[in-house]
Image 1 (cartoon, rainbow, N blue to C red):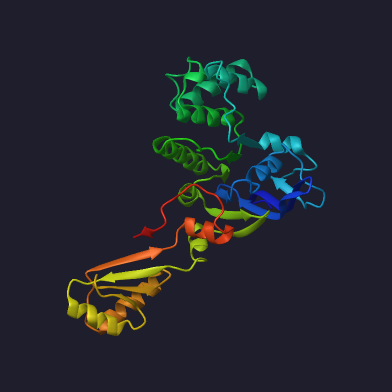
Image 2: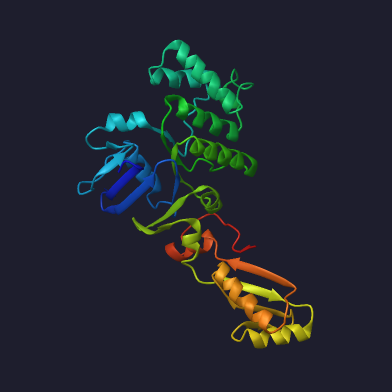
Amino acid sequence: MTNLAIAANGLRKSYDDKVVLDGVDLAVPEGTIFSLLGPNGAGKTTAVKILSTLVSADPGTGDIHIGGHDLAADPQAVRAAIGVTGQFSAVDGLITGEENMLLMADLHHLSRSEGRRTAAELLERFDLVEAAGKPASSYSGGMKRRLDIAMTLVGNPRIIFLDEPTTGLDPRSRHTMWQIIRELVREGVTVFLTTQYLEEADQLADRIAVLNDGRIAAEGTADQLKRLVPGGHVRLRFADPAAYRNAALALRGATRDDKALALQIPSDGSQRDLRAILDRLDTAAVEADELTVHTPDLDDVFFALTGGADIPNQPKENAR
């Protein structure tokens, strides 16, 4: 357990007769980004609340260790090791950005001088120095999110829970947040991320788990999850009709598009698969004018595992 920042066995939570989490196991190595995906209402936020000591798990849940601390036996030690940024900003809009930071420093029992130093360093790090003296209510959505995370870092947590941190942000602000998250992980921080944006998980997460009907439907790296879904293929296009016909003979079983002079061959996109296809073309002395690899994306994985549950629309095909 020494290399795991988060370890939970058989996580369970019900509200009345509704089972939200039904025996969820989680293992998050230190210094990594773990992303929990799931339909709206799947229990992602409930999982974050339990792991961050905000609500209690149901009886029957196994051991939960956060930062090496037993959550049930020593919740105060867990709180000291973590930071939490929820879906809704904890920023107080009636006071300035600097005052928000100093308030957080007081909550962490920092001395006045240490609090001011920490606030100044974090405001500079998150490019909020110019806005520090302005009411937080005047901040843009991206600025409020940056301030929110800066406040979370006042206590120097080694584990941070980010519950849908970029919801509602414009693409530029979202990419800024991604860069901030990557920098934190490079410094050794562990990030537990829930998100509605599949691209976000694909870009950031070392491992991803898909939560559905209270259970983990699948877990792995983004590439491992994509390989669970059929539909990957290689598309070859030819300018010369004779080359197209010869390639079709060499690649028997390929789906033909005579009008576009294109062939589609089922493939997982692996190097071995591509080499096998190209070797068969070389044997037939044929060269394709265009080769495109199409692999399932996390959208396809999500819909396959959750039965098309509600999630914001994303592009349905990646090509490389």
